[in-house]
Image (spheres, helix red, strand yellow):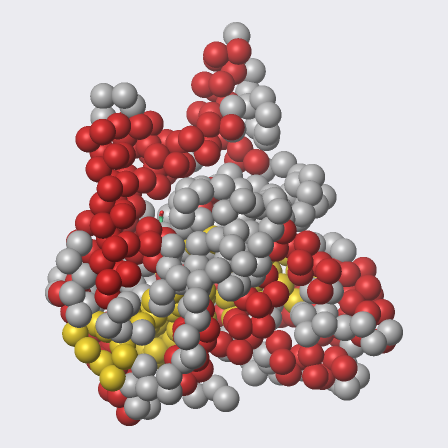
Length: 475
Ligand code: GLN
């Protein structure tokens, strides 16, 4: 039988599998065939696993014996910085090209227990640093909507895999926007959960106080399903929180949506702005109230992020010394071994950030940069907390531009960093934020997806899901 992958959701696939309309094997084979057809051009996957049929068989047994959960047999794509025992986890770096994970990340363990299928591992910017997947050591991922353009990053492979119907759900990680930005570029939904909502155990760390795993889905209902499974305390990650850590009031039918217009005055693409205005009109028609609001220190968010993140990167990446993990290049003595291994293993952007981070953490500059940025991070978080006494959700575009051309920003790191202007705040404050598709920009004959980003207070993913469903007309 033929399965229409375009319209497939977790809920529908689950019902179909229970009703025996098709088997898990038929479902995964349909995806594998589509990957074969499309991925030689898109390059979303670094590897498609060779044990997918065996995984499907186990999932089918669960279904046949009445032990299925809603995710049993559901095909996932996994970003290459999330450990799956026995599989390579390279973080798209030469450093870890042949590194096999020795254990499952907590998110993977939870999905395995639920009977989910892992189709393969997806391309990304090296160690999750970047916004275009161009920093991968293994080639760029192309945008399924226009192959001359980037899919976004750093989780570009995961977003593209979903957008080309190369999986039904994908997992990524988000340190400064790496789930939401590629979701927006590829026309799918991406969530950065509340810091600590989902365990980081088994994720290759970038900036530990900012990192969160986040799903990509086609519907908000699917997002809720995956989030509910992945969320929760984990003994292996002391920063995790339980779902009832933050108080939850009931969700009103009519929400107050705050718009920090003052943050959208410069450098935003005209089509992004007009689509954003149309989205506000749509939200008002649905009965929500839209108000202007001020986030006094939001202008510092990007510089603060680009001080704190490299600082954490430089310390997290110190473990890749050519001895403990991955690539080893021989020098004349052990010091030379370190130099040769790190120079041979890390790409340009990774080295740039290690240098920046080492600089801001060095004794002469620690107070001037790192401590200042940390103080400002608290101030920015306070601004958001204050704002949420008056509004339920804060809305911005997800990105200042639609997907850009491959190569367009590659030689200008600053213009690349500016792409993160709306997304980094959620990582700095630890608040949850979700990007949902809001329409298209026209570039000649191609339509490029656009997204809006909603941010809610800590622990209020439920508000994002309610508003997201309303906006997209989901029941
Ligand atoms: N684009 C941002 C950066 O380059 C975000 C990365 C991420 O979220 N992993 O740092």
